[in-house]
Length: 81
Image (cartoon, rainbow, N blue to C red; front, side, top):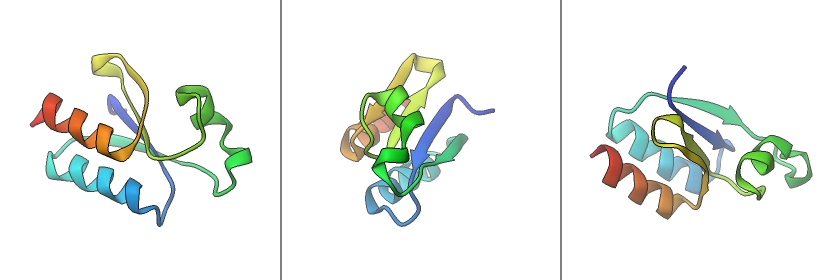
């Protein structure tokens, strides 16, 4: 199990941006696919307080439920590049 977990929705361009950065940095990560319906996204809401994706957690750095693709990409670059 990887330290980084990404909550993802297939076809989401913001999720693709984060996946691309994770792969560019050669980081190991787990993916949890969220339901298309926001009302069914209870797990990502529990972690982040909202139902939008992408969201990441990073156990190695005590990051829980970071939303917003631009913020996530910036965090990954600052932490792992």
